[in-house]
Image (cartoon, rainbow, N blue to C red; front, side, top):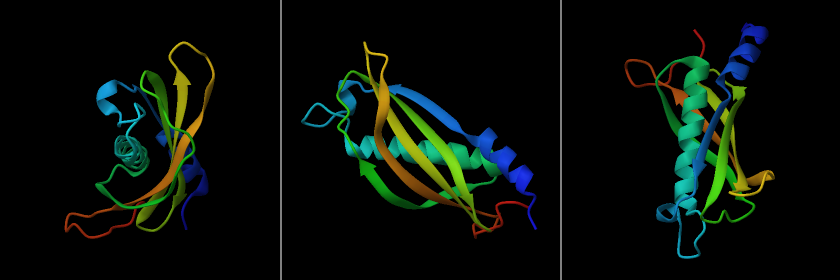
Length: 132
């Protein structure tokens, strides 16, 4: 049986925060953050959080229900927050939220959220236990 206190401690340590600016080169024809760019940022943050949790090679196998609640205009600051929310035998589920704040305003609010599942790989490139 896994040590729940150790898992909780690792989950807390693995929380990942990345801050970025939405420059025009990352936008679509509406001058808002391109969705594919947001997904790439979210996947990277999920990967970092999961890696910090288990310190093993990982691959993303699933992104689940990514909700684009609000368009993010060019010139915004975004904070990407990734948290491990579930640990399976060989997989880790990470919730990733993107918060937006306008450049000259202190208010920050949720714009995009989704879940990513990553699997730990052994030397044979096959799934291996996350915790060993």
